[in-house]
Amino acid sequence: MTALAHRPVPHAAPPPRRRRMRGALLAGLGALLVLSVVARITDSPELLSSGTYGAAFRLAMPIALAGLGGMFAERVGVVNIGLEGMMILGTWAGAWAAWMHGPWWGVAAAVAGGALGGLLHAAATVTFGVDHVVSGVAINILAAGVARFLSVITYHPGSGGGATQSPRIASGTGSASLPLLAGGEIFGWRSPNLLGWIEARGVFYVSDLAALLRGPAETLTWLTAIAVVLVPVSWYVLWRTPLGLRMRGVGEHPVAAESLGVRVFGLKYLGVTVSGALAGLAGAVLVLEFAGIYREGQTGGRGFIALAAVIFGNWRPLGVASAAGLFGYADALQLRSESAVHGLLLFVALLLIGLGVWALARGRRTRALSLGGAGVLFFLWFATTGTVPRQFVFFTPHLVTLLVLTFAAQRLRPPAAAGRVYRRGQLE
Image (cartoon, rainbow, N blue to C red; front, side):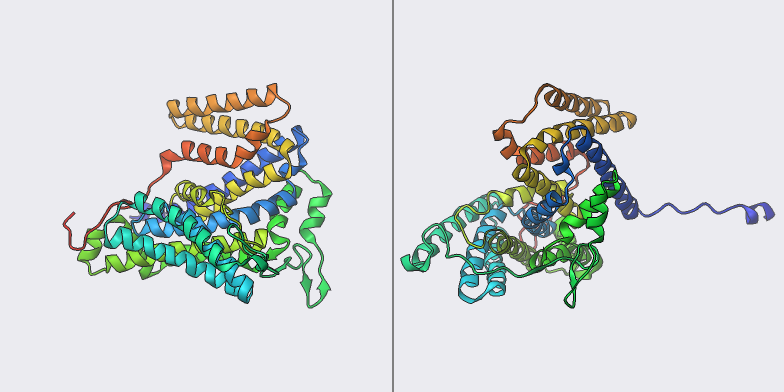
């Protein structure tokens, strides 16, 4: 008894979620370290500049918002292939309302336009049992046609718009830099730019980390700030509220959820409508923050990239946001510096080889061989060339999408009932 009484109590293992967060943070810091080394080896400062990070942050916002929308839909068991079409509806409605009444009315109209597309998708898939992919593709086609038709009947020749674009919108939602961190103003006083000062010192890794934080902190718009806040809000709603528990239950096992008195159809409608609203908000970002005008084809396939972000993010808000940041970084890099994309080849090579070594240490030989082989191919590409073809530079974001889906597939777990047609009262 005495020996047992004095035996030290082992420390409890941290919860799985905390371990995942810690692992993700360490992985991110490690990737930044590798990128810092690569930037200096290849003399590619744009790989780590605050300007690149700021552009990546802004370019990631539409993908992140549409990705959160896709996540909400799939968490209630509905695959939303129509994100692209809902973004199109958001861009058109946002541009029209902003032109008529101002930017914040444009935001509201974009959300309403996307939500209307989500409601249509919910009616088709939930009430009428249409295949989710068929309904989503139909919405994508319908949205493009509706936008063209509305432009033709709305924008007369003297308005500055036409069949393929709206009149130019006067202003966005406003922007500001964070005080003290990025030199923002406090009651008219220009505060110090702490992160900019650290970045300018050129200290290895420390300055690179400061640049990473400074990019999003400078000229942060209100609309992008709302998008950032929606990430933790989405996590809280889905994982910390009774409503979120019911929504996830509907996406995992609707029969069991209905047997417990959960209104399965109502929650499916709610999830898909929220999905459309978030995609519409992504369209508002494209119109109000990027271009200041609606143009046909403006979404540029971002709705489909958002679907890839949902998968890579493992149907979790933080994962979706991280994937959107990765795609935004690739997009920003090809816009700002084509030569830096060549340096990115070395980074990808080292990353793949490192992942291959990690897989080999865990006994996954086949996976290690495929990762290591891909890493060697990228290294040979880097070593035997001095530039990257322009066509590949423009394809960089889509290549990142393919790589992410290829090498992240082993750890993914979608909602069990996602994509399945459900009928009220069915037994399994």
